[in-house]
Image: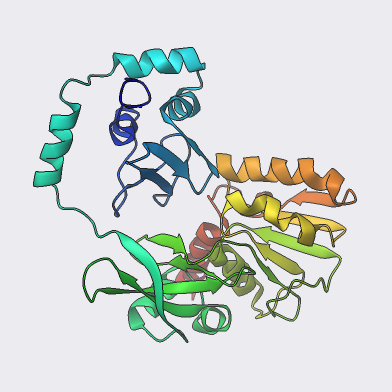
Length: 302
C-alpha cells in the first residue's frame, strides 16, 4: 500500500480535505456525506480505512471520495492525487506533538448496575426521558479506558446479542457487543412477537421518547431498536413475524436508506405492509429531537 499514493494517502488527512469535523474521541469524525449529529465515523489509521457506523458503510480512500463527491472511481483517484502530500507525514507528526490526544476507550465492562450516577440521570433528563422509563429499560455500564485506573460511566441499552449499546453525555457511543433489541407489548425484552404490528427505531432515545409522548411504560406494538442502521438485516427474522412494520427512522440519508432497505427486504418477510412513520416528526432529525421540542413547548405553556 505504501507504494500507492492513492491508497496510502492518510485517511485522516483525506477526511479533513473533504470537510469532515473531528469528533471528541481519537479516530472519530462527523460524517462528511450525511447529516451527523454525533461523530459516528471511525478510522483505522494502521489499515487506512474508515467505517461510518451511522450509515453502515465504509472502505478505503476511493470509496470515501466517491461517497462524498458522487463521482466515479477514476475521478476520485484524480482528486486524491491533486491533494498536497509532500508535508503529510511532517504535519501529522506536528499534530501529534501540539494537539492533545483524546482518550481512546476500550469496552472492557467493569460494572453493570441500576442507573444511579447523577451525571447520567441528568443526561437522560436533558434528552427528555423520564427517570422511570430510563431505569426500566437501561442500565448503568461502567467500562475501563486505556489510561490507568480511569473508568467511564455510560447509559447502557441491552440488546439481543447479550451486549449493550452505550451512550454518554460526552457524545461517546460504542457497544460491548453489537445487535438489535426487541421488546414486546408487555415492555419485556423478548424475541417473541406479541402483536401483528412492529415499530422500528434507530436508537434507544427515540424509542423512549415515543413512550414518553404516549405517557406509557410499555409499547402498544412490538418494537425493534436497531442500535445502528448497519443492523437492519439482523432485524429481518423478527420483522418477518409481523404483518405491519412502522418505521420511525431518522430524517437523514442513512434513515431513508434504511427504510428503503426494509421495503426491499419485505419480499423475504411475507410482504408485510411497510409504513413510513417519519411524517409524525417531520421537520426534526429524529423522534428524540421532536420530543425535546414538544416537551419544551408544553413546559412553556404550564
